[in-house]
Length: 586
Image 1 (cartoon, rainbow, N blue to C red):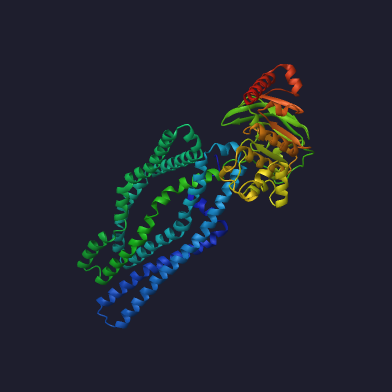
Image 2: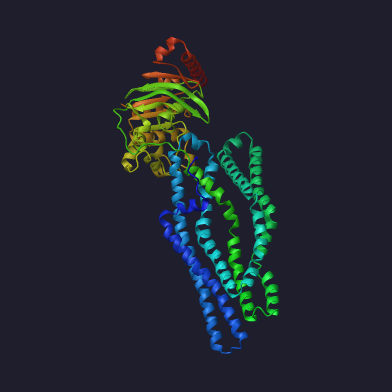
C-alpha cells in the first residue's frame, strides 16, 4: 500500500503555526468559554425568577438579588470577552508576523526563477492580504467559535435533562437550517477561488499600471492600459457580487431557521402542557433557555464564510512555505581558492532548456568576459555562478568544491553581483551602500563612495548621504543608481565580482566614470563581465562567446577576431555603431 505525507487540515495547519503561543490560545479559549458562560447564565437566572413568580414567591430581596446576579454575569461576559480577544489578538499578530517573516525568508531560499514566475502583485497579495486573513481564524474562530459552540450544547443537555421531548423539539429547526447551510457550501470553493484569482490579477495590473505610468503616458496608451485596469477591477468586484448573489437566499434561510428554536418549542410544549405531561414551570424554563441558544448559534454561523475559505487562504500561504528551495548545508568543505569552473551545465527555465552543456573556466584573479546576442544565456550563466539558481545538470565549482556543498552565507560572502538593473531600496543613499557590509561605519561607506566615483554627486543631493532614493531608486538617474550599486559592491570587498552589463543604461561620460570605478573594484579579484559594449572587454584574459545556450567560441580578443566567427561579426557591428555615434556627436 502506498503511503505518503498527507497534508494537514487547514485548522491543524494553522494551529501548528501557533508554536510557542499555544498556551495563550488555550487561555483565550478558556476566557471565551467563561465569557459565553456568563452570557448564557442569566437565562438560567431568568428561568429561576419565572418559576418563583409562578410559585407565588413575593420577597423583593429575592428578585433584587437575582437582578444583581444577572448584572454580575453580564459584566463578567464583557470582561472575559475583552480578555479573551486581547489574549488571542496579542498572540495572533505575533504569529502573523512570524509567518510573514518565514515566507519572506523562504523567498530568499527559493530559486530566482520560481520567484520571478509569480507576479509582484500576486506575491504581494499572498504576503499581505492572505496572511492577514489568517487573523480571523486564529483570533476569532479558535476562541469564539469554540466557546459559542459549547454554549448551545450545554443548554441542550440541560433541556434534555428537564424533558427529553422538549430537547428533541429544540433540535427540530437544525436539520432545516443545515439544509440551507449545506447548499451554501456547495460550489463555494469555486466562487472563492475565482475571487482569489481576480484579486491577484487586479493587484498585478495595479502594480504594472503604476510602475509603467511613464511609458503609458509617453506612448499614449493611457486609455488601453486604464481599460485593462477597469476590467480587472470589475472582475474582482463581481467575483464577490456573484458569489453573494448566488448564496444570499440559502444563507438567509440558514441564519433565520437554525436559531428559531421557539418555532418548534412553543407549539410542542403547549400541547404537552395541555396534555398534562409537562409542567408549566418546566415549559417556561425551556422557552427561556431556548431563547438563550439563539445568540451563540448566530455567532457560530457568522463564521461560516471564514470556515469555507480557510483551505484556499492557507493553501496560498503554504504554496510559498512548502515550495522547493535551494538546499545548502549548514557547514561544508572550504574552497581551495576563488577559481570558478562550469562543467556540462544545463539549465531549464519554465520547462524550456536554455543552457545546453556549458563549460567555462575562470581562474582566480582572472578577467573573464561573456558576450553574445541578446537572449543567448549570458545573464543566466552569471546568475548560476551567483547561486541565484541551481543547475539542472553538470556543476558549478568554486575552488574545486561544488557550490551546492557550500553554505549559502559563506558563498554569498565571496560574490559581489552588479547587474544592469540593480535595485535600490527606498532608504537613504548611505543605507543603500551599507547593505554591502552591514555594520560598516559612515567613514567606510563614504570611502566606498569615493572609490566608486559617486561621492561628489551624493554631496550635491539635497540631503547628501541622508537623501532618500525613492522607490527602486526612482529619485536618481540610471547612472547614479548604477554607481551607488558599484559602491555597495565595493564596500562588500568580495573576491569574486560579477558585472552583468553594468554600463548598459549609461551615457559615454558616465560610462567612463563607471569603468574607472569598476577597475578599482576589481583589482586583484576574479572578474566575470557580461558586456554589450565590446570595447570594454578587449583586455579580458578570456572571452566566451555565448550563442543559443552554448559556448560558441572562446579565446582572447585577438584570437577570436582571427577565427572570423560570430565574435568578429559582433565586433564589426560594435565598431560601426560606435563610429556612427561619434559622427553624430561631432
